[in-house]
Amino acid sequence: MSKKRDQLVETALELFSQHGYHATGIDKILEAAGVAKMTMYKHFRSKEELILAALRLRDERWRNQFMRSVEQQAKDPRGRLMAIFDLLGQWFASADFCGCLFINASAEFGDLADPIHAASAEHKRLVMKYVRDLAEQAGAPEPGVLAEQITLLMEGAIVHTQICGHDNKACAALAAKRAAKVLIDHALAAAVR
Amino acid sequence: MSKKRDQLVETALELFSQHGYHATGIDKILEAAGVAKMTMYKHFRSKEELILAALRLRDERWRNQFMRSVEQQAKDPRGRLMAIFDLLGQWFASADFCGCLFINASAEFGDLADPIHAASAEHKRLVMKYVRDLAEQAGAPEPGVLAEQITLLMEGAIVHTQICGHDNKACAALAAKRAAKVLIDHALAAAVR
DNA sequence: CAACAACTATACAGATCTGTCTATTCTAGT
DNA sequence: ACTAGAATAGACAGATCTGTATAGTTGTTG
Image (cartoon, rainbow over all chains, first blue to last red; front, side):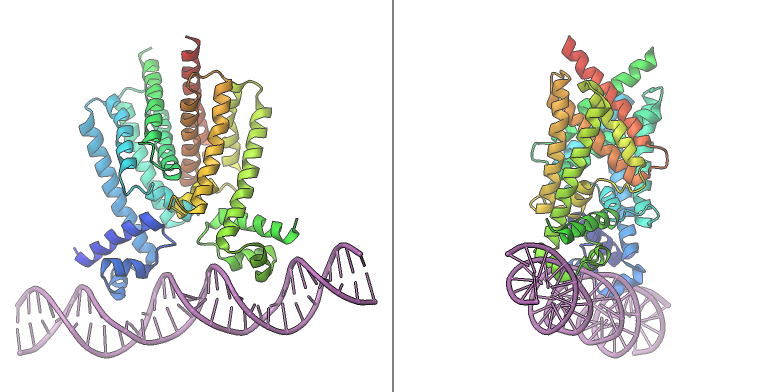
């Protein structure tokens, strides 16, 4: 489509990740992207729309990479559920880890009716649905419950790492993985019975 | 101490909870608290110091109430670990639930060196230490590991509820509780062996 | 070349933000 | 009742924010 538009969304994504949404002014994004202000307002009606566009891009990219990595890391559903936490560990260890953009967005835009908050909720819903599908394939008798438990561990690990730092190499991811193993084994053992 | 100072911190706490830190201007706080601007700047050098004071108050109150409730809800350490999630459920169901102020602060002030971020990290450290003590009393062979797992579930439940809403009565708290039960039983079973 | 769309630079409006200054009033302790 | 400290209102500076308006510059395509 438009090259300038892509540059804008890309730059916005980076700056929002690093400094948050309110703290990142339009002018900073424009300067970093090398785009004139009027060009931006041709593409986006407001800052809110730019945020939403950035979140859409992030959601698409993150989920695609997440699902692709999970599926190439293990072939069986149970292994894939476990692989989730290895991927989190890699993510946490990356230099540009700034936490989850959607969790951060929900923190800044707390109103449930806010479109930005709604976009975050939708992202989490989609991630959880994917985990649920894996749990179902693995034969969990209550895939929804297992998926929610695993999702809680994921979100907890993300937040904990963001707050307490990721010096201790993916510590939270390891703890989450151990916990997930117990929960998965427990759920699948109940299935066999 | 100073009545006006207390009003300021109290009001700041409420507004920061509802609208976030950057989005809440000094003027809004002053108006809501019924305090003049110069009075505030007599007590606090800057907005950052007001935020830190609000977080200190919150940390003290939240942890005190949390520990008191946990300890009166159950007498044995294992029951207390489980009781954590009943308390979370009550918290989530309260009308003024806005997520965890410290998680939200870390989202807005992402820099680990930021004093506000550091205050959040310290709060989480203290909460986890308390959980660790409970795990130790319960006889967990690796109390640090169990504490981290439980903490991850707590933070996950908080974030998930904030993002996805708490209509479905403390749903995330229930899922977390079920997961915690499995993890605790697993840890303590290993201890007996 | 001509025409049309995309983009740019720059100034601007109007609001809001943090923090300062001054001059006045309230209030509590001796 | 007097005085010192606390709090007040309100204006102000200077920065920054979102969004608009204008006029000029590219670049592509027929």
